Image 1 (spheres, helix red, strand yellow):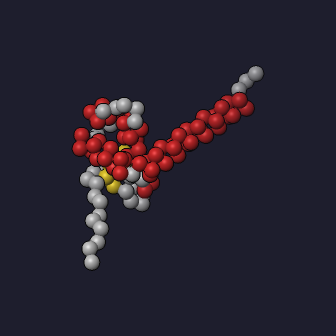
Image 2: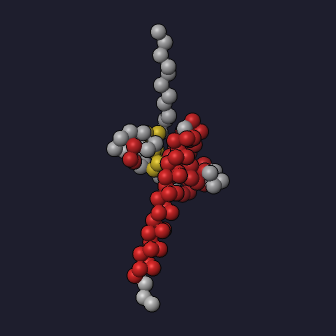
Image 3: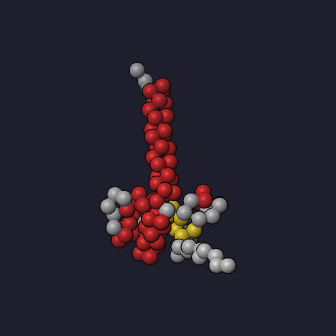
Length: 102
């Protein structure tokens, strides 16, 4: 009986206890979704290295390849991060409104 081949992504780690269990680049603690956030804004892999100088080109491409095989997963993480930022800004505005001097 044949078994399905296990997909392996060089440079990518996804395990509990490492970057919150989110897909990340091995030995960097940089999440795949961080790289993809830049990629979706038009950054080339070479430009991504400027933002993350600890990465090498193979790692940047590995993150992009992982994304295209796991679009739903990474898009959900990006949406979650956007939601957190919006909530943070809302709470900050409320706090400032309550604590600002007249």
